[in-house]
Length: 259
Length: 274
Image (cartoon, rainbow over all chains, first blue to last red; front, side):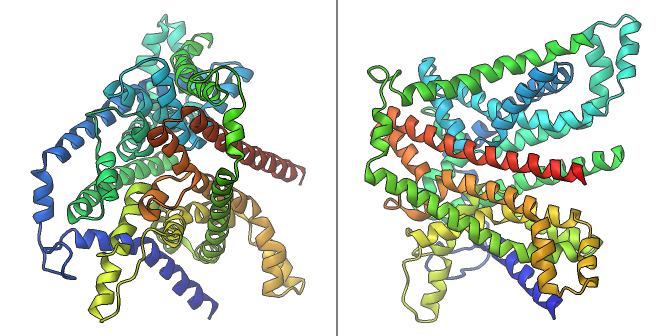
């Protein structure tokens, strides 16, 4: 009896969690706009999506920003994770606290504070400011993805490289990075996904002309619902979802390997 | 291994420039050093006007109710899933976690498609000859959006602690003659406290700051802290006051995190003593 109750309850919760998204997805294939409940299956909203210039530009912007944010945050974050283990106890604690701050800090605070900084520095709001902010919120996640792999790194291999006369950068390239590659790839994927997914920080740090997909969805959603935005949301969800499945499978795999 | 230190310098420089400096500038704006006429507490005084205090109180209250509701709703499910075995448990748990991977903007938008005037629920109501209802743009809609968005963040930590606590304690309690209810309230619930505390932080913090949910589901009338901040920067152009609000919000969040970390440290000490 208790079990049955628990099961029904949990399934009801799952329905609550999935219903809105599934219904939205189903309706993105609806032929009619709003007049009827169901006007038949159609891909017309997806087709109109891909002939909409604004959306295509927004998509390009989103991809460029995500790619740049991924590459730079992965480089800085990986180097940082390698370097942090060589720092003294006190500086290590401080830098990890700042990293933690980057993770728990709500995006509205990150967005507002960066916007103020850019104004203070007299930067033009646009691609550059978007790049900087996306890199900023991605690095902490790269660091925490790479750190666990570094902890398990065999330091003897590094010392051996040194004894054999390798320079630090050469050691990094030939000895350290190959060993921590799984962590780096996970971190990079995570950074890419976070950048694709971000709305609030972009909203505060974008400039005229640089609209990404989430800003586009937001501005259209404020005007009301439309099947086109349903379709766009479904596509965005599918991409982010696929990437995150990949990240999580990778994490599981590395966990199993290290066990 | 001294050489390695140098690799962290770019990140340190980046953090100083784009994490520490922005927060400092935010403080300077809040105290009127930048964009104002020298050091002043005026922006904070403005905050203590009844109208703004009311918005602050409303945000805290909504966040608190939302957190409580998330806790009550997710605990039974977390408990049920944690008692299943192996494969089934993992599948159910993954299903609960997956929605958190979608961003809040899209999840909130999906509720708009349900609740809007020409949305799906209203379409069904008219189909059955019922009158259309105003479901969107009120506090109720904001509330649904909040619980929907943050529920998994509560369930996740509770579930994690529940599966980690050894079942022997519960068995011992039953063997000693306690019934199921007593065992639950005296053993299971206290032992899952760390998960509950983490869950509270993970739900309360974003719900105090939320800005997308009230904007899309609450409409123009419903004002909350996050939206008020955005309003000050984009509509009012009062950056000093906007920064002051952001500073206040940051203080609230850091205070919560401080207590939670303290609690964590204490419970760790307790574990070590055993």
